[in-house]
Image (cartoon, rainbow, N blue to C red):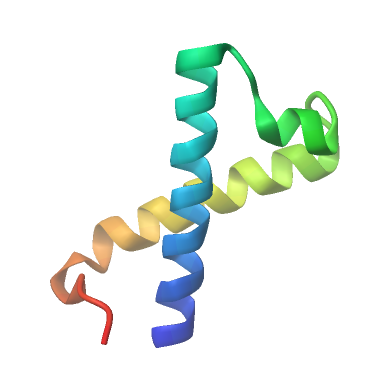
Length: 65
């Protein structure tokens, strides 16, 4: 579970950085790397969303050992 939590944190950080870039500079890094709404782009967006939901429900053990 520890590895899954680390992966989830990394994905959520990637998503947060991407949203920051969109908000401040109107620049979508994920779409730039993988293409505008390609299968890979959608997979990255889906994984970030799933990671966020996972962390939302795993909040009891929020700290990393």
